[in-house]
Length: 178
Image (cartoon, rainbow, N blue to C red; front, side, top):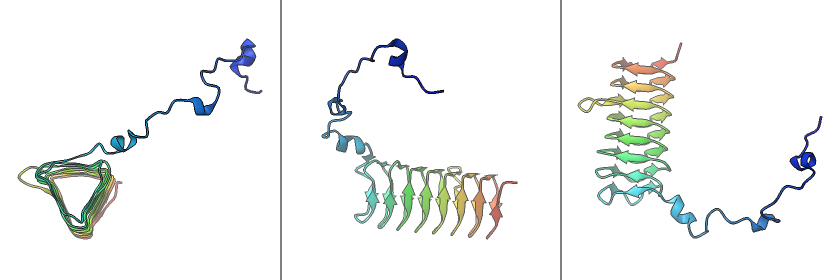
């Protein structure tokens, strides 16, 4: 069997609106491209260190503090009393009232009322606490595709595809789905 083009069945050539590729109108004017790539909004009252790298597409609200050497990548939304400390790196995440400690890395996650310890890695996770009690992630913790509510992960622990609620995970423990 071979594929048959429409015009072979009808014996007519299909109508073509343009004879050459070059004649197609552009999707965007070149003058519009810089405007389209910078849709973020940085509140003037946010405290951002001069050496911090904030992507123009990020949304940074009032009360947010970004320290020296921090990197705020594309697609990030920071709200409330969020602090990204020295050399913290955040990409594609939404955070509210959260503290990201020195050297922590957050990718594609949602954090609310949380504290992330130094050198920790939060990847595609949801970490949430209550306003009076933050969800806490200690030093050098790795959370991957996990959901953590009102819980504490102590130093060196790992959570991979887990749901943890109202719990404390001990030091250097590894949680895996069963």
